[in-house]
Length: 103
Image (cartoon, rainbow, N blue to C red; front, side, top):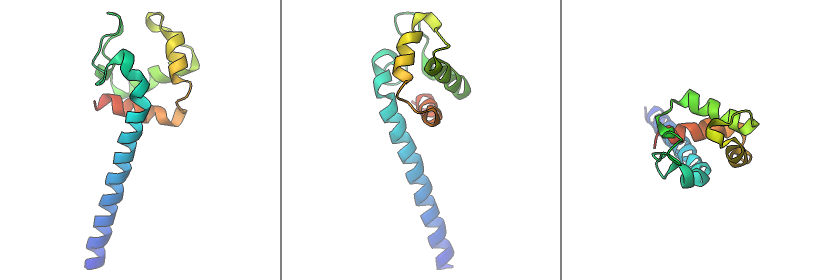
């Protein structure tokens, strides 16, 4: 019984740590986004760009991927967003989208 309880406890700790590290990674990735989109992704940038945290996760991921590829130029900020996204690995885009959504 002690082994089962220990296993459950250890699994819980690992799950919490994995989620915490994803949250921390999302925070680090989002650092450069704060200047335009606000600390909580709550800002309407240049009275044009809507609040990004109001987008659903799938839309956020899709938009971020399209900006990274350079195939999206919403509101004329495509070039800036492409530069912002260039250092974010494709596999970290879902982490960023989830972080933004949870702000």
